Length: 258
Length: 106
Image 1: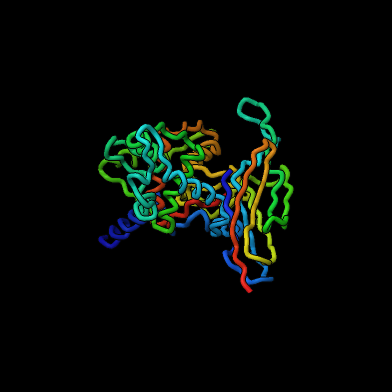
Image 2: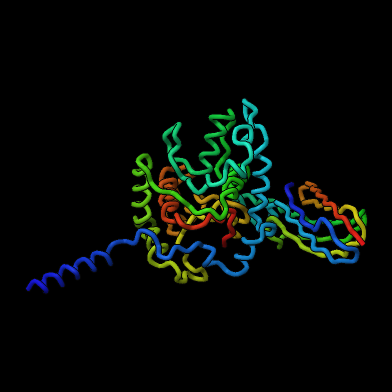
């Protein structure tokens, strides 16, 4: 009798474990591992990688004075290679001054409005992408290290919930593709784990560099859901959850993707 | 127009050197429409010329079939120390130029 009960309990616990949604894909695989040989070569070649054009542009912007105070990024932060190393892998995070969740692009624009007295760059503008790519490039090869803290926990939970919520005419959640079916074929494509470690990335489909927000919006479009506008809280929540979920992967920005 | 050029800083006389150039350009095909349905005019970098100490060594004529941000690679024989210059122009009349020095020994 006691043995039977033990067996039953064991069965229950095994069943519960199987039913629970896996939090992170195991093993973690960057999108580049699902890409073709050509794309891998393009990303690995620092000259041929077209995203590097934005990095070079960002390097110039870094020391160009802007705004009413005529300050450049370098006026405060000095050499980006030293001061910005390891910064990009910690975003999105809550900005201490405004208590707002910001991604790297949002942080750049905060610096512009708060410290330079300059208007914020537009979403997906070449300037914003160039600076974001330049900053991310300083952390290339470092491991994403985003974990929700007391300030960001609610946003993280909203992102996690949205990630698992069915949306759109296709009635799919992010998890349906990127947790349960990665590695399988969807038409000509191999479904990836949906990490953001290559962004800002050069997508051949876009023919230019684009942000992770733009890529997430493409997924909304793909499942025939209404796309949240740039800067929407939902996108940031998702970015935060995705960054945590991919923590452990090396940053590849500027990555190259289909 | 932003561009990057890569070639060896030094080479031996008679050696084949690899020259690479990447130009940031949308290479608009002329077949696309904007969100209001208006056609976007064709605008591609149609001509690129490279000169080695003033002498033309490479010319590319490109059309709407070339992807955005064109990247070209070609080879030349190192003959003398000097400068390799690049000039290109797009359909909108915008011109770009880059230059790189090379020192040749032997």
